[in-house]
Length: 121
Length: 252
Image 1 (cartoon, chains in turn red, blue):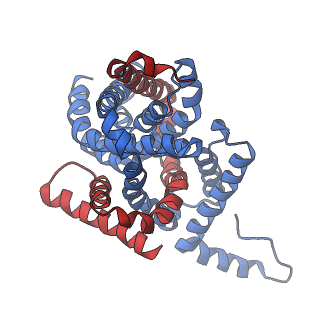
Image 2 (cartoon, rainbow over the protein chains, first blue to last red):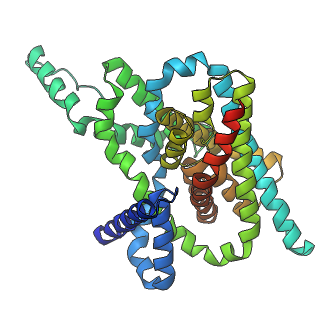
Image 3 (cartoon, each protein chain N blue to C red):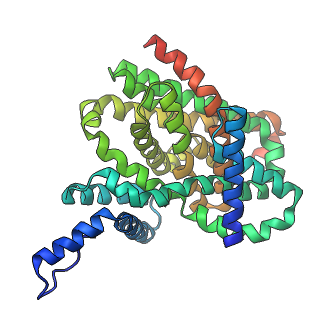
């Protein structure tokens, strides 16, 4: 677990350092993810050492959002004043995002695949 | 959790001393976060992982109420909770593992995924700005709404760049994730989208990490595609959203 955690932190650190050095607007952890993916493609044997820790971490991904969510306390006033606009924009744009992403992907997959391939139950 | 059951024989001021100590140390915020989340997760499991019993929503509600009831400022709570918050970074890096396992399919599906990513991200952003503007939200609020489909650390950075409030964006990001995770199944069924790769990818695009967490509960496959979408959307949004949203905000 410790080597796996260290590997994740090293990737994140390298990612953070790279995006700052190159002044690209990509978040450091995302660059770190790309770096780890590259490392694993080159050295698939490392996967076994990482997998238990990453699985645990990703299974509890929801927990990691809790502290940011509690920050709602700081904005109750604004949220109350603009409740209608924020609420409607939040709900509709989330559904629009979900639906447009799903429909676009399904449509492009149909375009690329032979029609016989589409009969999923 | 509060200061515990009043023990017979312990003077009240002694108890107050304990509370003063605990409320100033990061230990309490961290412990309470884990305990409340664990409780919320057990309820979620007991409900058969019902999408409406989202553990993040429940935990935020309970913790917010606790802080309010004890008069604890958010900053004090966050001194403990930051250790959990910090793990968002390593968890994002960890997404490389499920990605690697889906790599052969990713290679085959790159074009549909790229299309879904661009259309989904832009549609969510533009509609959030448009609806917020049409209903008379203030400019800072609109700018905070714009990046809400992106994973929290990235969205906060974008909000800062385009004149939003990063902490408000963090809250809206979490709300979007909860909402997306709770309503995706119904929406996809309505649209007759059955393919788990499409469901996962769309969920990751529109509802980032909370959608991804939900997708991992349904299946590893759906989770991997959601995680991929979340990572790609973070990349794409970090580059494109400051431009698109910045330009739209000049119009409103």
